[in-house]
Image 1 (cartoon, rainbow, N blue to C red):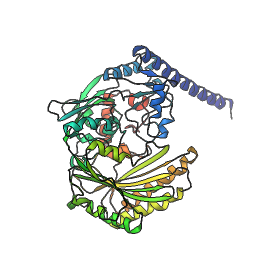
Image 2: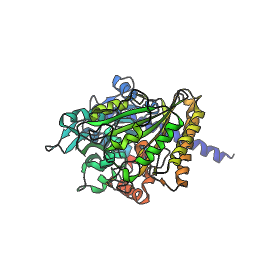
Image 3: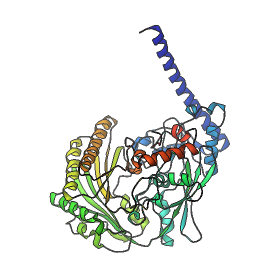
Image 4: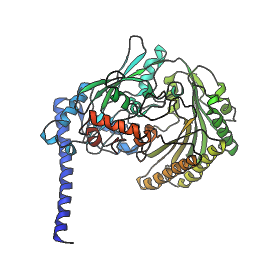
Length: 500
């Protein structure tokens, strides 16, 4: 190698080291600056608040990340002040030199970097958690850092609910800007379909209120566009009358006859002529300790015990006891959450959608998952689920690229969790291969739908692209309009980006 090329390589290496050092210095500077301007809002690695925040992520991939500091604002003005401090000053005029940061709501996403960051600043919004009902109680103004399972109990006395997460710990922000699967999704669609307004801190630090009448392009983009446009500090969402609902989990022996009956029952359930807007359910296939299991999650938002729409499932011989009961939404979320581990070590999930198929196709999907997942039986701590459920029936008020009022669309998730980093590659590759085989099968049947639901997707999946080229172009145009320098594309590296 010539001296010229040796010197060039040395220069490249030197510049890389300088860039890393500059990034570290910028993070230190912004942490100190915010701490001086907003006392008590910054915590560092030795602080109990920092340790508690870091340990409270659902996924181990997020818990192992160590930000330089954590910023815990208590209102929108403080978020705005943070953004202005990040982007102010001559040392920050080059966007590539800006401090990197992550924005955290509930912290329930599985993959690394979604709501936490190594070495940068994590904005933990969980102190922005207020709930205010409008005078007519038809709109709930919810803080962007609130957790749905803390919101529901506050609405029970009013016999109201909102369209939030179905398990404890899910944050409002990421859930609602990603779509939002909820108990009412067959009747009213995605959570984002029913969000009236967003209070947003833009890349300039300006605070705007986006609705169908003001900043409409931003309002529509936040319905599925995730963290690409700003930091949402308040969601104004529709409330719905809700007293008791019926539901829970029912378990079965994992046998061929049970699986055949499940496939037949689900195929009929998804037939549009059998559509029931009060119903939302799933087939949950599990693998743990080298043993397979099968269960149904059954939810019915009207106070009807064992409604007709579920009787093909409940008539299958089942195990005792089950958790099926009449209760309120808040209690239903708590009870359903008991079927999930409180945290997971290392994990992955992939999602795909397709139109309702024949029994044979559902049987093949189950058999493919079963055949491939059991090859991971020797992996320490391995657990897996294959979930088959209806996709929400959208009213079309979003950026997801879905046809409105479709009653025969299925959304499936293949997920796994395991203990050791040494097994990351083999588990991730195997689970991805299962999802790929499933997609090939439904493509062959001409049932495949390109859409990938953001909150169930892995970072390897092209979520924004799955919305369709026209929607992607529109989301990019909105990003360019409200974030012309790309702050939320480059300084917030986590999540699904419109410019990737």
